[in-house]
Length: 118
Image (cartoon, rainbow, N blue to C red; front, side):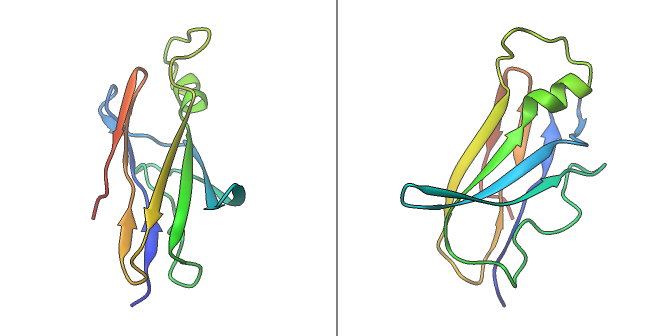
C-alpha cells in the first residue's frame, strides 16, 4: 500500500466543518519551497480528493497553508485589522512511504490546533 495525505478543517467557534477554506500544499527541499496544488474544503470540511494520493505521494517535508482569514471573512466573522489569524502554515514531515498522513486543523478566529490524525 502506498501512502497518502488528507486533511479535515473544523470551525470550532461555529461548531461546524469549515466549508470553502482554501489550502495550498508545498513540498520543502532544503531552502526550496515548491507549490504542488491548491484545494478547497467541501461541506464536510475535507477536500474532495486526497491532498497527495498514492500515485503522487513521496516522503519528505511538506507545508499545508490554510487561508483562514479569507474563510473567516466569508463566514461573516467580525473583521479586525489586521486579523489575528490570517494564513496558517503547518510544516510537517512524512517518513513512512506506506502510511496515511492526516493533518486536521481545528480553527477559531483566535486560535488553532493540529495533530497527526488517522
